[in-house]
Image 1 (spheres, rainbow, N blue to C red):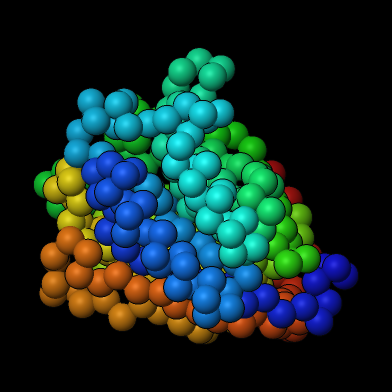
Image 2 (cartoon, helix red, strand yellow; image 1 turned 120 degrees about the horizontal axis):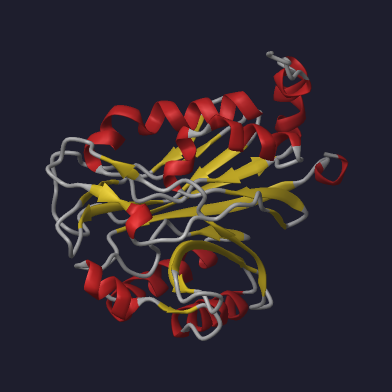
Length: 286
């Protein structure tokens, strides 16, 4: 982690309720990005499904843009370049040219407006969490298959998305590969979020000795699902540095929009990993 010595990074994480179309969501999102940039963030992180959560399977097919011809990404790249900030599009649903399948893709945009890295969500959310809905992401999305690290402000950054947080081997691999910060943009369901969100994120921070940035969706979306919110930034020691105040009794769409900021002292990554050097050990079970 030599390149991260004595580095500080001011980050922002956003929380909002994505609408059913990119046009509607971007109208709400862009002023939030402007605000975060105005507050001095060098890295601004958006949640999973950053531009829309479709009302139906058919609407998803209609709204998903081609990976190399996305008006939404072009607009977000222009905003990043306008403010000269790094912008993590937590995920966007795009159709790949390879086979026309849709992927759930995180996109890291640099302050020059260029795409620095992309990561396709590996773990598909196929679950029944008790909210009366049946989630089968594997029916709609092609899964990714590779670890992705990038950087912001000279700090190594590992990319993950939402349900990935339940698979600690991915985070361990990112930590061992040198990630000082790991992003977990999410659209966590309300029941699973209330039960597991805080403990999972803090565990991933503690296990890896990394900062965790977790922007989040919150509210009721066009398809009727309710997301949990509670966007957070967590230290390598597991402390919650910032959290969007979220009224769990308020289910209204967009009722809990918020922006949180934190100044990350990257030297604390070394301190946490030296105090508890668990990343240095790999048991061989046979």
